[in-house]
Image 1 (tube, rainbow, N blue to C red):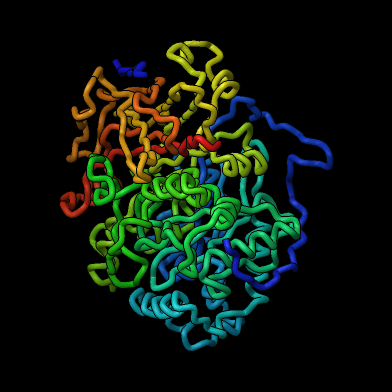
Image 2: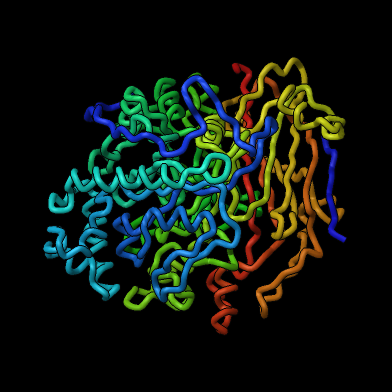
Length: 618
């Protein structure tokens, strides 16, 4: 019998050009009419969990095209709804087992659609000398040409032959129209989006820019060729708001930024101010904690006492070579959360007050989140032999990077209904959670008014909202009490059981130093000591596992035993599943080859809630 563990353990913004022209597009389907709100059948005051991705590329992205993608934005939205779409590589069709609730194509703003248009012999782009190389059937030739373009782009060098603003406007308009066409309020939600691809010196500063709807969208997306500084992107976003747009940005891949993503100075090397913090948080409320190119929660070097800190560490910069990052601090979210509350305690605001999501970064339209249905990041990886044994023409070091790709993650959104307005607003409020691809559901509430009986009441959820705050919120007014938190985690319906639920706490000490501590607040299988492993049921000969161990759900409350009302703090939940086969193990069994020993054979999928913050000044 499956076991259930229930424990009671008590800016300075730099100037940018005025993009005042907007695209005037009427939404094809909307739940909103003037002065009227129409609710869908999915509406719930206590909210539902909706899973999706907003970091998805197609062949309209320069790197997607060069690396074998044959799909377009329309294909991406059809795939997310459960349809079969063309695959690259060996041509095997791509199809998700369980459709998603929402999706956003976010092709790169830089040279949007240019490489794809080189296929058309009637397009002048096809006559360019570099077009012959980029469209070559020889993967090594096309990748070499792509690497040259990417290297120049990361240096801020624009190829005028590839920079046709009219083509960019057309492709961007088509992306917006395609998103509108697939949006079905209450059933399937889409968002217009693009990726700003800043990577100075090949250090990742990328952001996905997401629009709530198609109202007031600038006629051109903002490119790193316009500026590689985040402050310039935020200025573009603020200007778009003045023209009627509703938008936010989502940073990602801090692990590949070599310390730049959460650096403690702005782009001009100036120390943060309260105005800077407010500007950053106004524009980017959530952060992508995991995706195909690794997980950036924390690193063993930063959290040596965290036995689970080494999960899916893709340890490279964005160089076409295999350059390794040198700086851990500034690259991982937990340290940024610590730095943020330290800055806040000094009166400088909190520039790193991020909610959490997971995401994909697939470049073949299909978010390959299912370990046993993995189709790779790029079209060329659709062939499992290429994923494990190497892409023909690629250096072995680059093939190893591909083997170390994870399957990507999911963004979980707690929203009242599956519509653009509600899902977008949940991101703004940070009532979000991220997973490594599993569809476990994670809820997290905090209050100074909860007690040990709070979770025993039939109306516990309504009560949690009424007298507490959900993830992504602030706790205030301690009044001599310690905060109590409610954690509710439910396993994926047809997925693996749960191993444990943890609360990670960070705080600022009396002398301004930061600390972190991990509390096991729920353990499966009647364990009382988190040092005891849950076990492992994976059969490496068949790539199968059983749910003979672990828990179906955790539902517990926990009171901070070391709370100090004078100290700034944050809390977030991490939930781990029991071990399951990694995608590479499934591929090895499919191919009938030995499981590789240079990548993990099994993983413990996991989910992370957005934090809850406390400050004596809230």
